[in-house]
Length: 108
Image (cartoon, rainbow, N blue to C red; front, side):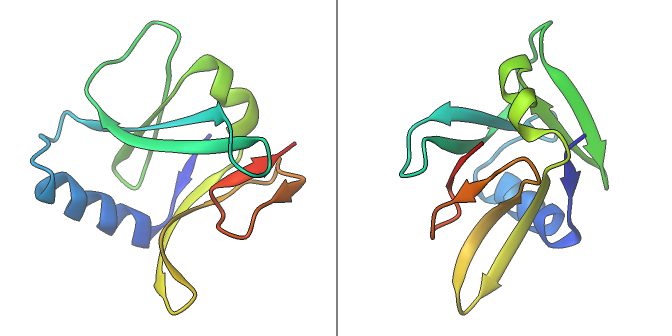
């Protein structure tokens, strides 16, 4: 399960309009190799769903996760911060044993 905070939901809705995506474009969250901690998050709009994808819905936001990434993302919350310490999406991942300062990279 991937959870979405109210702030993340609002920002996703704003970005969908700003970038010209239709409501059928869902949020895809993936984990890729890289970053200063070894793994990094990838977040994008996607209207394609494969048979191996898992789909979660929270607060009306559909989140697509591929099978491999799901192993790293179980229980993760997607949040958005616009505070003084930085602006952007944040992943609160209970599986991460170490994260980098920017919050875009982690290790397990």
